[in-house]
Amino acid sequence: MNVHHQSASSTQSKPARLRPYQTKATFGMFLLKALPILVLILAVERYVGQRFLIGGDDQVDRCLPDKWIYLIDTYNKDIWRGDLMAFRAERMTPYFKDGQIIVKIAAGVTGDRIQVDSHQTTVNGLLIIEGLPLAEKLKKPAASFKRNETIPPAAYWMTGQTPKSFDSRYWGYVYDHQVIGRAYALF
Image (cartoon, rainbow, N blue to C red):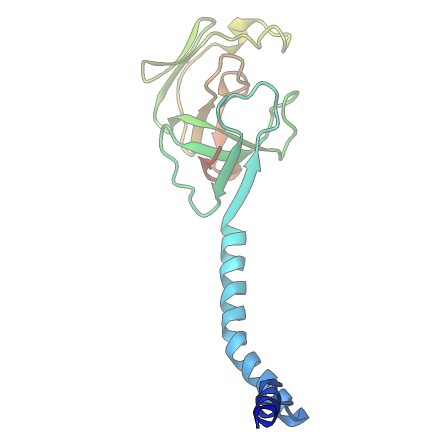
């Protein structure tokens, strides 16, 4: 009697085989349930993929020394003084090629007063950065970078945090058409 009982339990533990029409129906139900989730995932990925970029700074001498990976929000172009901003380089040779993505601090915005001399750069009278250490490397006298002006409409004054930053002191303004979006330092 024990043998018969074991035999019955061993036949019950085997999985039941589905007939081919049952397998197709199960797969069809899976697709019906999975399709909306797949569409949602693809829509979110498309939105996130279009809106955000990840950028990195591979320079040896970084102008933002503790930051080297950035999240760039291409939908947010509302830049305020002090924000990190990503933009496309124009007229920034020999350090950056036209079109290269750069991240710097928007130290000044439209209407701010800029003063640059060989000793310091100020925005609205506040010291932003000292000196013009790259003037010699650019083979120009420091006096050629002197400015005392108001930032024009749709323009930004960009700077780094280190004296050797190649920034607006040397190449001037970044304009709205160059702006990619607001940047956020990740690391």
